[in-house]
Image (cartoon, rainbow over all chains, first blue to last red):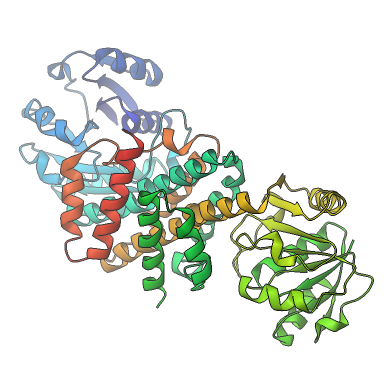
Length: 253
Length: 253
């Protein structure tokens, strides 16, 4: 397929590279900042463009991968295209593309960061489309990248995005808070890294409810009390500790 | 070394196997439930014992790996031993062994579950002892298992244990809650597993503060509001969502 990317952020970068590696052609890259488009275009052998009006008529697929707030403005400039247009957002409805003839969603359920290489083939792809033909095209495309492909409508995609916020962003915040605790006490974060890795590996084949450990599930009130005492001068952490310990107890009643 | 294990739970099981694999001899296993001692003893070619009074005089090391509340009772029955005695707890002070001649702590910083194989060599070992000679013995022992070894006193070990509660138990609870959300909406937890793995892998070499993503760090108030609306009938989850989103914003001011 011949593909145009609108956006040059983390998702557009990882996805355009995966398309190229999967044998597709990235025709053009547009970005609000032309210099960013130019960098990614060099990377994936595409042409950077200054204006959305320059999008090639040859494009089979246009991928919108900009901030959710910016999608509507982009869409208004694509009104006349005959290409299939998809966005990559977990939080935006398919309906934001409703003025377009052929529309869909291609949501990669993963956390992308600059400076962290990632095997895109391991990223689940959630697809949705405005008509059956577009859906079939997206399915073929997604499978050509060797990914697991799921048919997920907008309502369920919102649930997934919400669940991903818990399992990724909030988890990473807990890593951050634990790192803060270590730093303040001149302890090395390397001490926690194997634990973090194992905690995630455990649930790759088992269910998280079955592998919980620690003072809350053991109802070890002495340790829970001692931990809360240690957080006496950190009310924010104390609140998080209490809230999540209560949640563990509730899940394991 | 010739080692006796008091306890037959997850830590004792993984650690006694590692000792055996490292060329040490596990002499005996005691457990409050004799049948449990017998099972682990078969596994590591040791003798199960019914009473702590049967502990061999040949033991170089006695490892107490029982619930924190049970340590004091065990210690009272070991008053006359000349062997080096250690406990494996993150939350108990070295002082709980204060009546013993030679004492220390050997704290493996990891989450151990039945039914999950684990490379013990990747487990950081935190050691502490009542005297320099005991500490040197523990250091040699820990290094013979090929593990990273850290000298950590009781106060810092408590901090580590607290930080581990955030980075492991609370993280696993977030996995559990996200799995609940998916189940209620007939979505497959396999969709989230690659994300969970990548979130943990990212911080193996980078700092968690540098790799945060999602609506809270982007100050995407529209998505934050939509997520809270979706949790309208789940006050517990709504509270966790609000608390951790606020925490992310605070960390990234």
